[in-house]
Length: 43
Image (tube, rainbow, N blue to C red; front, side, top):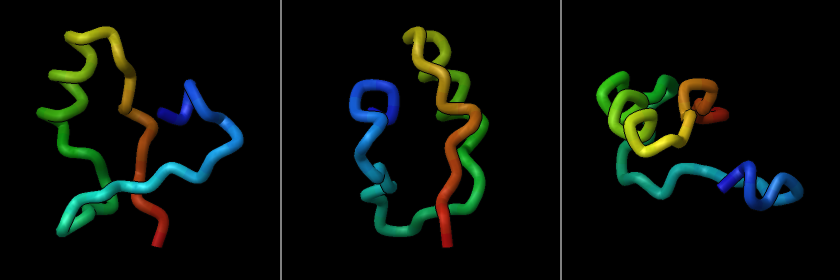
């Protein structure tokens, strides 16, 4: 979403956001051609 809408503030909609992205989520998204490895949860 950040690449599609760089002017927007994009945040997690999860019920328990973590500071770091789950490595399994990074792997799965990478397999789909999407890099989320630099994502984080601002606090």
